Length: 315
Image (cartoon, rainbow, N blue to C red):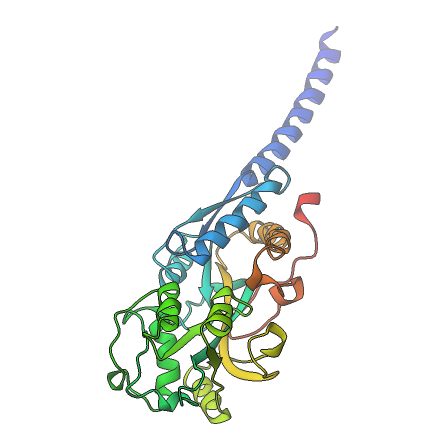
């Protein structure tokens, strides 16, 4: 090979290699993009659901280049600050009952399920409204807990003070349900998805009944906390009562992210998380009515990502 032919061949090879290196570098810069998903304490609903979402997202890791890792955290308020500061890329959150307002860079990634506020008392207890809870035994939760914020919404907008209740040691939801069944509590106030095994037990096994909220209460609650939404439940549909239009206020459990996170990473995660939720919803009772339209429905005050249309695993 003469010098001119060798030079031409070498130059062509170098151009090819440079193009290959550029493409490989661009691909490698995105490869195995790590998404830390903040949940709450280990053993809780958020932690378990987060593990299931990450497991399904990682099924498409080779094509989407997204890797999801579940992180146990100190809870919702921690999650919001950690996402805002960049310690977490995605996390579970409530849409309303947070300790502080959402930082400006927080964005809603996806709706997971509604959490309506409900009040359950024993049939024949004589309690027909939340303003009749004075002198009753209620689990109000720890002072800084999300449960306490939900209790406060009910009490404060009904003119009842926690000091007017019989003091009960704070307990988690499973213990609270059992205490109600053991006649150790007069009422249970929760914000859980419907259908739910806890409500099935309270109503079907332990003689509980849903107590409705007046329009006056709903208006007062939404005025005090504008991030709450009016929610309507067909209790008859779930075998939890005769009411078809049980009206209350509530919020959504959502996944949040930050405007500082790579937009393509979030788009790919959203697509694969949607696939994950479709599968998970078939085995989880409280996700029975989850669907993609609900997932990306714009509601509340949080800005939201655009519903993704292109399947990242096909890229």
